[in-house]
Image (cartoon, rainbow, N blue to C red; front, side, top):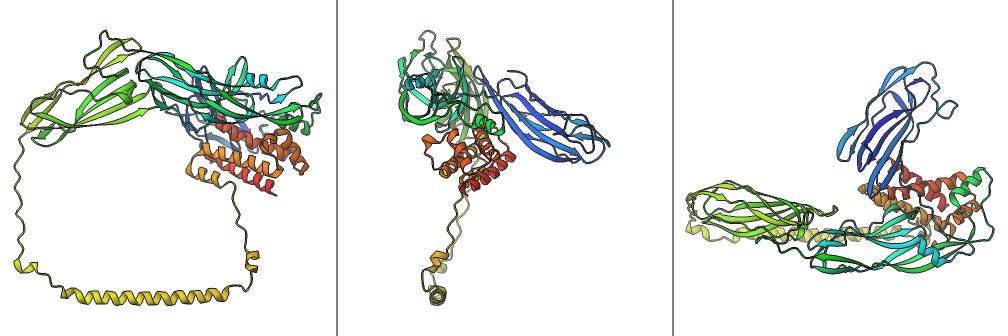
Length: 597
């Protein structure tokens, strides 16, 4: 990966008081970008912005991200004005840009956007920000639909290793590669018998990336990505996954092509319509992946330590007690923390050599494991409860654990330090005397409570009578105000449902990934309802022509296209801004209202 950069850029360093300057803050070549904060602009009026642009690149399995936030500003006064740094958490570290120093004169410096002489900022040097995928949905004359599906729609299983040791974690990823539009669902999940299974991503998430196969970009949907720990030696088969698919095509009309006119209408056609016009149709197909065989080698017997309990990976071990000074008979705790990478979940508690007069009677465990990393990484802590029956100074010998390192193919041993414990003789505690009770106080005088009981019964009866009178009075008022006929049903205002209610809830909860997916579904459904089109006919050609027939302008159709594209792009680049979320929601409201009209 290239070096991470976080920069602030200005379209000019000198301008007039009535001019505009374009300022952009850019993070490049980052694996993770969080908490992106732009500065305030007390000496400027914000003419436009913030406008956000994001991108993602995946090269040889390594992902990097880009994010830029742009403003167009107008100075409030002349002089030397400073723009403070922007900040962001980049790959887990707080970074900031350098401050910008702008000189503002009384006379114009030619920095107005939209007029001759204004040059906007160049795009940042971003080599492969989420490459585009050219969908091959048009079935041209002479093409065979089965061949087209075979070349543009298939399932593949990637396995990090097909040859591993018993207990060594491997990663299996089931992927759908597509250059065709489809509705797909899993009808048979892969059988993973013979392994302990740890999913690395939520199987319900539709993770999408772009990969190049035979020189063509494919949209790649991760069906399942899981980490597997083999439980037995021998050849174990990863069974196929099966998908049921409806694939949408357009059967091209002979001789059809796009207009070569260069006007706005032709531009819209190039944005929204397929390469050729034709008749839409749906092809149903069931696909499955090929089975994959994993060869699991047994652990070597040569050099296997006597205390080996199945740990495979790379580990260290630490020991500690909750107190180094205790009394005889009091319970104390010994904690053994195993850290490292490998088959952590299946590791058992290490054996402890307890000194004489020290007894252990209970062991518990707690995991802190990152199952999204390969191999599994984190720690597992075992807590032993123990007591000492005799006073004195005790030494807990180092706790050791043997493990097999698959990288070197050898057994190794990790150990803790010794622990010194001072045990004191328990102090005798004096028992507090029991309080004496006068014999005559044991008798209870029940007559004292009779008056209170009678008062409570009287109060409850009065409350019931009063409640019934109020209920009867309210029922009479309701009967007087009721209309003598059913006209009130005609006057009732029908309940207005908000199609974006789900999106608002996701926005309020801060779940922006589901927010963009919900907005995308809602807008597509509103388009479908407006045009009365089934899913198989809901393509760009029919949408553009249908909305034109309903007097939508080209600008309005482009606006619809832009919000759909932006929502889909957020599924590729999960980097969100609360400002963008609010803007998307407002635009979606306006589009849905127009589609309802």
